[in-house]
Length: 160
Image (tube, rainbow, N blue to C red; front, side):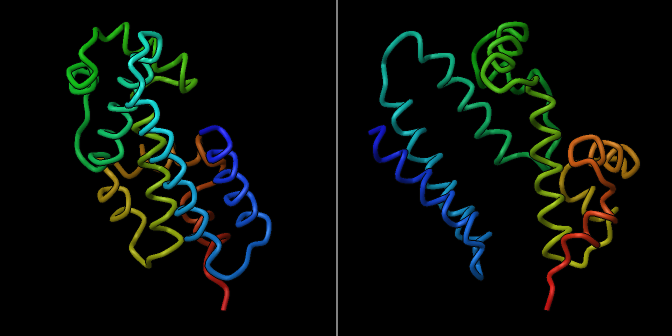
């Protein structure tokens, strides 16, 4: 199983290194394939020490699927079936940040994708990605990606 995951990682690295036309789409496809593969192996496991990872995986899946909606820590604790402190501790140990920080990161990632692919106004993108305040969105975007949404769009506009 580890060899197959390593091959998937190598394919992803190859796409990112070669940067051939369509590499972004191909890279995302490789990454999703890898995530799916790893998720199946985690869910198939019944070892007790991997239960927290499975719960975090369920929470992350929920965040990915519902990132444009209002998400509370209470929603996430219900999905994980643990207390807020247990979820936050386990999530931080595995991901390096809190569940709510992850929600914001997912939203900013989606916004960055929309900034690259669409001509939607920044405020429209903010609302579409689950932010209710465009100023808060801009602050979070700059905090996570190190640039403003407008500058990000300018730097990542398709050339052609």
